[in-house]
Image (tube, rainbow, N blue to C red; front, top):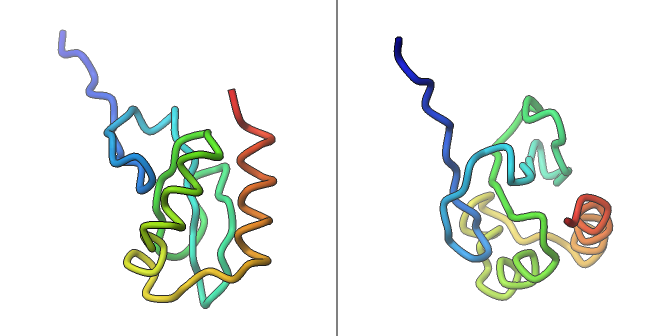
Length: 89
């Protein structure tokens, strides 16, 4: 019997590959950046660790601008930070 492969995704903050279930998906659709808990929201998605430090690294490295084609605003950064802190381990 075959064993199932676990889907791996790369965090845009620390640039490490982890199983998809250990990361949080952030989606951008029509300029709106949201935390996608279900993993099925419309739009371009990127993955980030459940750690505020990774979010800060991603912002500093301008990873969101590269991935989404636009910068995220201060308000969106605060919203993402609050959501990630809820899920922090």
